[in-house]
Length: 445
Ligand code: GLA
Image 1 (cartoon, rainbow, N blue to C red):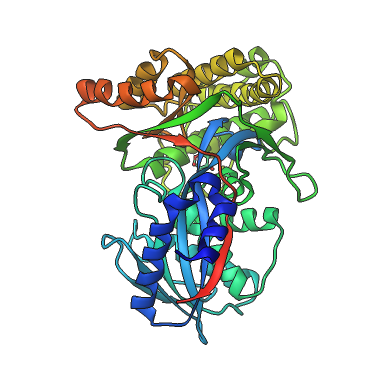
Image 2: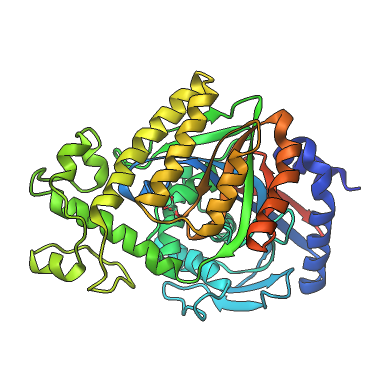
């Protein structure tokens, strides 16, 4: 076994490093087959699970995610031109080539290379076009890669790993905050108006810690703090295996509902820009000012412009009151969750996770029947103190906080219950909070 490889892996995966060796060696061999012998640099970026703080980031609120030990690898070799050639160890993702420029043609909607193109275009714009290309190979297959379509940010991990590699070859050395903002802008290339959580945690994750992030910038910086995960408890992630098709449109409609709330509240609170600005108000006072629903057309007629939001039909009912209520209350739950973790008050932490789920289901309306089955099944296991959907919603995963002695029971009990009620397979895996993205090693193949 290659000692250089193993010691690089130990610094990232700790005791689980030996489980990674075959995967890295396979990827290195595949790279050599694709591009021939020579130097290679290996980069990685993790997926994430959000403990609490859903749909708060684009409202300048608070989030509390952790980086998974499931990650996307990118093996790359600098080229002498602007061309990026990208292969993938999985046959479902065919080879894609494009030239780095400030205006890169998008591939078909849903094509895996769009995340890579977004990062490359953003970097060419940032650095004024001076970005070299590379030959690359992506490895993110199960079980050690980031599950796709599961709401654990496989797409952000791909964007981030691309950005880290491109920046490395262009000798651009941004701060982690600069890089996270850069990657968040790069993802807008694919049309989702998401926030900054996924990119920050992919870059700033720390082993055994969640990341408290205040998504409101102050003088260009963001307050963040690594919060130790509870010692006797594990975060278990359960993938429903269901992923709804038009999440992007639904997502943007929720963003629109929040922006509508801000526009309407601005009459009473001049100068506010995000829901975060009314966090200290009493909800009853805010509720009295908000309509249950409105539309883009009605807002326009009243002189409010919601900004650039693709795929929000002008006549779609935006559920302003309920969406704002979720965001307002979720921010408070995140702060309370950090406090509970710092005081080792696990019962309270569990209750907050449960409340967050109720709010996401009833107010933001992002749950699904499958996620409900999983949340109920999880809570029925002794030793599970709380469970909620995690990520954007409309399918994907739940996260549960489970006493370490109940982990085996949890892993055994959930899949059959889920199968019996839905006919589907649930994938259960523990979140071993891992370090953020970066270069893993350089070597010859
Ligand atoms: C997606 C977005 C994030 C965040 C979550 C919901 O993952 O990319 O920015 O908004 O949904 O919390």
